[in-house]
Each structure stands twice: as C-alpha cells, then as structure tokens.
Length: 248
Image (tube, rainbow, N blue to C red):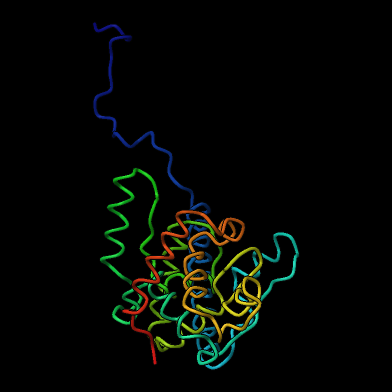
C-alpha cells in the first residue's frame, strides 16, 4: 500500500490556481477604458475646433502661456502682430535656426528626427531634438512641457491637423507670435520691445538672428547674452538665413 505522503496529483490544470477577474472588475476596467478613450476624443475635438477658430482669429493665449502664468501669477508680456507687420529678417532667421525644411515637409522632418536620434544615442542622452516649427507650435498651443507617449501622440495628431487646415504662412505667423523668448515673454513683438525697445517690423538682421537663436533656451540666454554657444549659433544663422525660403 502506497503511503499517503507519496501520493501526487498529476492531472491538475496549470491555470487552476490562477485568480479569475470577477464580473464587477471586468466591468470596471471596461468603463475606465471608455472614459480614457472619451477624454482623448474630447481633446481632439477641442484641438480641431480651436484650429478652425484660429484660422481667422488672433491667438491671444496658449496652453504654455497659461501654465507659465499659473506657476507664479506674474503677467505675461505678449502682443499679437500680423505676418506682414513682422520683419522678413526675423522670418528668415527663425526658419534658418529652427526648421530649414519648413516649406518642404508636411509637419514632420523625418531626416531631422533620424539625425537627432543618432546624436542622442551617440551621446547617451538627449542633446538634440528633431521637432519642426509645426510640432513645436502644436505643443505650445495645446500642451505643456511634460513628456509622455500619450502627449507625443496627441501632439502628432494636432500637428497633422494643423498642416492640413492651415497654410504655411499661418503656421509661421502663429508660431512667431506665441513662442517663448524669455521669462514671461511670448511672441516676437514682446521680445523686440523687451530686448531692443523697437517693433518687430523694424528688426535688423543681427537682432533677428539673436532672437531666433535664444529660442533653444530663452530664460538662460535672456541673462547670458554673451554666451559663446549663443554667439556661435548666431553667426551660423546670419550666414544661412539669406538662403532660407519663407511663405509669401
């Protein structure tokens, strides 16, 4: 007779001991997913309706501006200027500094993204970004500076919609009027008044190049205008801005 302690059960199903989700838990997960999907759809509808409105109306504030204001409740320096009221020097400078292929792509510069990825992998840290003017504008208008895969996906959708709904001139016009140039300084008109006490319509090549290159780190360069890296990039922009193409 086989001792009881040596008896083994060989036909037990491998999943028999795994806990099963209850019906209530499954229903909760489904409801949670539906809520998340509904929120994402509502965000896209908000972006779509905003892009329609801003096709013909000035952009007086952005999500980035609101986030800046809510951080300390200090007033934002911002004043809208129409496209033809901004110096062509600055248009050429900002395209040279930020997105040389602006007129050639449809929102995404895949070569630029690949080059930035290779540089980041080589340095084993983020040292370059491949974002176009359109991508940066989408982020400034609708999102704040927090990285996540969901946000990047939403940003890509917003960029695609913008490129389909707006002209290149409108994209550049809104970008120049909404990008950050320093602490609580947004838009090229406010920047021109702050740094040079003049209108954006009167910017010289040197002044335009300076404003274009500080965009990579505006708060730092606001206090460090003689930084060697800044001066080097300014010389490059001055060299290449004459070759850039801008919307008519």
